[in-house]
Structure formats: structure tokens, C-alpha cells
Image (cartoon, rainbow, N blue to C red):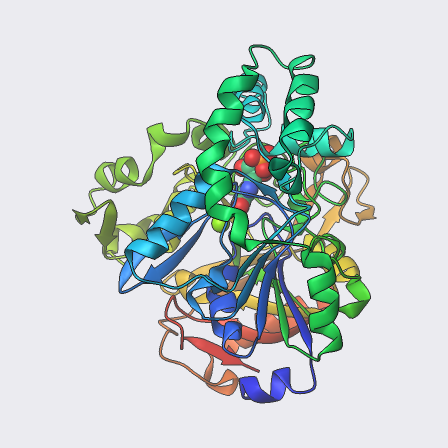
Length: 471
Ligand code: IMP
Ligand code: MG
């Protein structure tokens, strides 16, 4: 099927992740952006990270929607938390590359990440090594905490000095070492820069909907990291489900007529601490918690994979024989490293190695029940060259009773996982129709639909824009 048929008769599409983030949503957003009049983000902040190609150069953006490269209305919604310094740096990047962002809108209702939020985040959770959550350290949690506690500072507050000073003063009662004057002074240049773009985006959104504009909502993080449905407390502080991305741009989830849940397949990843039932290797969590100590360069050197480095951009053969050998190792920990290297799974925000495991259909079933049935599978090409792959299809407790996905983190650490094993497949990156995909891969897709209750509407088979199959 063509994209045109898929999106026909739809006005509002949301692209959200059904796992622990990093499923390659950015590429899909880019793909769907052509169709959209408006691209809006409604949750999270600069804990997210997506690679965008600007004038042939690889750039990582954390706040601006992946759709910013398209000359459309781009909205940073009311549900977001915004670090003004990071936002202004990203705008400067665009300016430097002569990319117009005059159609950008920043919600007056989004909350501002203040310096004391970042300090608090770092202080309470320097790393997951000490049993912490392993946050990105960007102040996300403390900023949302203040929002819920009704002490938050919104973008709109910045433009009323008395309100702003009063609110920072209030914060100084709760946070150590808050220098009110210094903070106000530092905010000044950022305020000036963003002022033309600050809008009541909630009412704008309502108008855009009424005027039949086509709206693309870009999720951040993923369902299993969501504050309401994720593996609490090992989760982020925003609501990443279809509900959260909808309210975060000022609309009801009911207004989203095509939600698309993105699923990495047949492997998935997690960054930070917390349960990961299908993780490869019992030492993987600890090893990945060492963060930059075990970054991409460390692993490439350790496993003797040659690479070139140009402007922080590391290039290597993702299907190097040593990588394939690791992927086919009998040792699950090494197998995980092989998949990490094949998929280049290192945090875009923190550079940390991502934990690797098999795709979990029990978690996907949970996600389908919340985010709806449409599934888009990504990174499927990464596993080509592996002799076999596995899909988790059920959880069992100690007495062999079947269990659904649960937010009970202790339980998730104890369950037994049932896997189905499939024969591997060769290179699929050049395939553009569903029918041409290898038979055992298609069989695994059909099983995955049965296990998860979802419907696979598309498959991504490479990093390039056209490496997509719409079913
Ligand atoms: P926070 O969002 O910085 O508070 O981090 C909370 C948890 O969410 C940590 O485990 C992070 O690694 C994880 N996390 C936050 N943002 C992302 C993301 O964009 N992709 C993957 N994991 C994320
Ligand atoms: Mg990411």
C-alpha cells in the first residue's frame, strides 16, 4: 500500500513509541511531515534526542520537533518542559544553516526548566550506579514536580517580571542556593529571542482543527517510560501515551484519528535503570549503567571494529564480521553488544550504551490496549545476518500462571519469559513491498500481531527516508 492510502481521510496522526523510547520515531515524523500542515510536540523536554539531517549535516535536536526542517507550523505544546538555553541554541543552529523557523509556536503554558531543577535532578540522581533511576539529568522530573505541585513557572510567566520574581522567590524556599537576580538576568536574552513565537497554542490548535488542518503529533520517550503507565518509579515524569501527547498539545485523545505505535523489532532497548524482562545478559544493566565508560568508541575498540571519526560523527561498517559474530554468540551478553553495535544503540542525549533485549509482545499487548492497534515496526534491518531471533510472547509467574504486563517492577524482575525462536534473515534494506520480505520474518510479524493484538501497518528497513514499507 502507498502512504497516500494509509493517510487518506485522516486529519490527526500521532506517532508515539510503544516501548522505552528510541524506536526511530524521528524518521517516521520526517516521512509523515510532508502530509501535515502542523507538527506538534506535547510531552517531555530535552531528555529526548533525535537526529535530523540539516543541509547534509547530522544534527541532534532535543526540543525542536523532528518536523522543524519542513516549512510548516511547528508547535512546542503546553505539556512540554522547556530549557530556554537549549531551545535558543537549537534555534541558533537553524539560523546558522539559513533554515527558517518563523512558523514556530511555543506554548505560553509550557513549563520552564530552571537551573535549580537541573541541579536538583543531578543531586538526587547522579547516576543509576547508586540505585537511582538513571535520569538524563536535564531537570525534567523536578520541573514536572513543580508543575503538579502548582509551583511551576510557565513560559507566559517569563513576560511578567513581578510574577517571575515572585515565583523564583517561592522556589528559593524549596531549593538551596537560588540566586534570584542572577536567574532573572540569565533568562533575559532567551526571553527576548523566543518572545515572537510565544502563543496561546491551545486555542491555536483548536482553530487549526476546526479549519481542517492536518496535524501530526510527535511523541517523545515511550509508553513504558510514561508516568501513568510506565515502570514506575523507573520512568520519566511526563505522560507519553496517546492521552499525554494529546493533552500536551491541547486536544483530546479522541481527536487523534490515526495513532501509530512504533515498535522496534525484533529487538528493543532501554536507557537508564529499571526492569527489562527480555534483556540480553544479566550483567547488561550494570555494564550499561557505567554510561560513557562503555560508549560507542569503547565497544568499537574492544571488539576491533575499525571506524572513522569526523566532527563527532563516528562511521563504521554496521555489518562488520566481528559484529555479526557477536550477534551470533551463545553468550547473551555478547549477543546484546553485537545488536547494540549493529543498531548503533547509544543515547542521543547522553551517549550511554542502550540496554538490548528481544522485542516483548506482552508489553506490546499492553501498549496496544492503551495506544490503539496500529503498529509500525522499525529497525528490522538491524538483525539481518543473525542466525536466529526471538520474540517474547508471554510472561509466566513461578507457578506457570500466565501474566499480563504489570507496572509492578519487583514482579517484572521475577517472571519467566516464554520465547518463540525464528530463523534469521539476510539483508532486507532494498525491499520495498511487504510481500517480498523473507518468509520467516513475515511469519514472525503475523505471530506478533496475534500475540499483541495489534496490526502492523508499516515496516522500516533502514535509516534512509525511502526505506519504508507501507503494508
Ligand atoms: P528523565 O526523563 O531524564 O527524568 O529520565 C527518566 C528515565 O527515562 C531514565 O531512565 C532515562 O534514561 C529515560 N529517558 C528519558 N528520555 C528518554 C528518551 O528520549 N529515550 C529513552 N529513554 C529516555
Ligand atoms: Mg531518542
